[in-house]
Image (cartoon, rainbow, N blue to C red; front, side):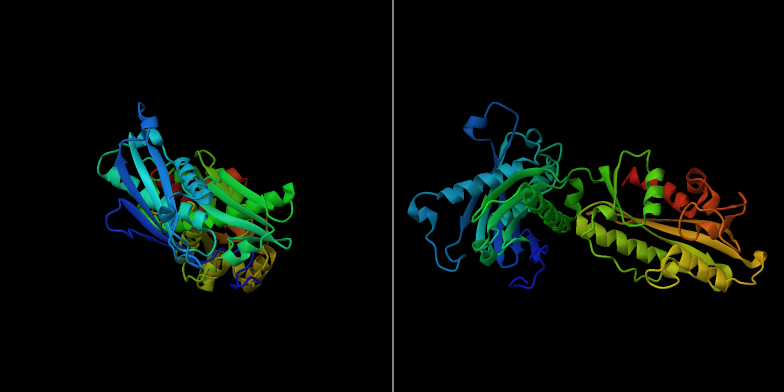
Length: 442
C-alpha cells in the first residue's frame, strides 16, 4: 500500500482551475495531490529573431520554483544570476511538448510564452506543468481565434504528461516526492490524445530495466494520461470541442461482443475508428441505476466519456412483454439475477409465459442510444420493434432474447435472421440509423 492509500495504477487527485489570473490571455492552476503549478499563457506579437522570415509562430516556456515550494527554502535563480541545468531542461521539455500539438503556421508570426511557477512541490512538477500549461495555451489560442487574429484554431490534439516509477519491482503511476526519492526507475512520459509519444525520459536510478518493463511503464503511463486529458477536457468545456477531431474515433460503451459486432457492421460506412470497452479494461463498471432505458444510456455515455475523454456511444436496450407489465424492461440483461447468462434469462421468461396463448404474447424490443463527447451536449435517439414471443428458442444467431423474438412480417425470430436483415428492421438498427445522421453533424 502506498503512503497515501492509492493503488499502484491510481493518480493523485487532479484539479484544474481555469482563468486563475486576471490579465493573462490564458491561465490555469493545476493541483496534482500536493503539487501545485500556476501556468500562464501570454501572447506576444512577433517571433524570436532566429525564427523571422517565415509565417510560423513559436511556443516557448519558462519554469521556476517558488522559494518555499519545497521542504526547505531554495534561493531564487534570479538572485543566483543564472538558471540551473535542471530548469533549462524542464523549460525546453515544456515548450517542445506543447509545440508538438500546435499548428505553428496557423498561429502566424507571434509567440506564446508559457510561464510555469511551482507553488508547491511534491513530485511530478514538470509533468504537472505540461498538463496545466496545455489548458492555459488552449485558452490563449481561443482568445486569438475569438478575436479573429487566427483563421483556424491552431491546436491539433491534446497533450499531457505523467510520471511512472519502479520501487522494489513494483510499478507505480504518478509518483509523489517520497516515492520519487526511492525509485529504482524513474520515468516521465509525454503523450498526445491520440496516444502518440512526444517524449519519454527514463532513468535507471539503481538498476537497469528490461524492454518488457519499459512496455509496462508506457502502458501504465498511457492509462494515466487518458485520465489527465479527460480532466483537461472537463476544464476546457466548449473549447475542448475545437481541439482535434473527436469524430474520427468512437468508443462503444459495451463489453458484449455480439452487440459490438452488430454496431460495427451498422457503422462500417462511416470513417470511424471504433473501439469498445474491451479496449479499456481499466475502466470501472458503470452501474445502471436509472429507471428508464434513456437514463441508463445517458449515464453510461457521459460517465465513460468523462473518464476517457473520448466520444462515446452507449445504449440501453431490452425486451418489454405486454402481459408482464413491460418486464423484463431495464433489467433485461439481468432478469434472472446479476451475472445471468442469456440462456438463464430466456429460461425464466419462458417459464413466466407458460400457457400464455400466442395472441397474447405481444412484446417489443426497445433501444435508446446516447452519444456523448467532451464539450458537447449529449444526444439521444430511440428505436423499437414489435413482435411476438416464441414458445421455445429458435435459431442460434444473435444474442440475448433474439431466439425468442418473432418478427411477424418475416415469420422468423431474430435468432434465425442473418445480421444484415436483422440490422435493417431491429430496434437497434432503427436507433442506429438516427445516430448515424447525428454523427455526421455532431
